Length: 340
Image (cartoon, rainbow, N blue to C red; front, top):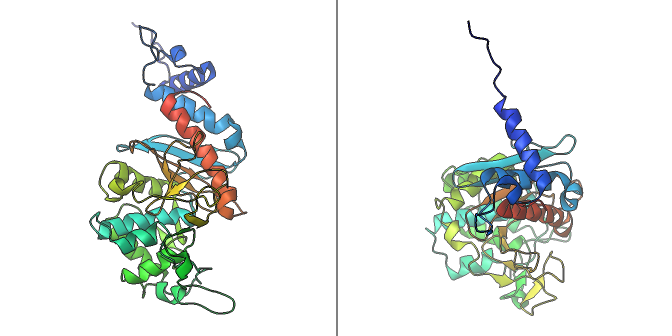
């Protein structure tokens, strides 16, 4: 008669390995070094350990708790976690503010088969001159919002002296949407059109018929969109970083209005930022929102990620930039396999 022996719990073994690798802070401690002393590419377990430890302990991430984060590639999510008390999960639905811009850029790219017109480019990299925009009201259509111009809400105006210059404003995309046949759409119709136009890449709703900022969705859904982008299943992949313009007025004469820090040289492409603000910036493509929702695709277009939270205080250079800084640290930890 054989005596039964207990088998080690693989989940607990994995957790212990991750904790050990994170504490070591080096690739060699987890077997990452080559025999000749050169550093090998980090393994999946090293990447996950470094990213998880960074999300949980770095100063940039501690300041934005509670939040959810994820990193993936063309095959799906590779690492994820919820940090802080009452943190959101992958399925928590929230307003994503300006993270809506990348969604609309991807939608237009699909409708154009990847070939944008000059008008498309100007309206999607915010140089069209349609710079007056305040807010959409929930019961309006896309067109009603775009043309709502009065003493209180001032939407829709074309400002000739802004034409050809970068000016961060929702007016560009709102005007463009009326030219794309979306003018009659209310919130429900707009959501159906955008989801269908992206071939079911994600599920979303609109809280107001505002293309540059009205989307409500979850990190899991947005991640599905990013996964399809890096997999080459959506035309926006080839347009990431294209037609980019300088977006920092203090550093270039071609920009007028921007939410980025005045000493950080960012660029703006087709509905997304290009993080060219060296030495911190790594060339990633991203679309941070005012409430702290930060989706990104790395410069190699191999990896994607999301930092998801809903901060009470808005402001692109506030909650959005804070999430960007945390997301960068997680991304760098993942790419290098080293805790930040």
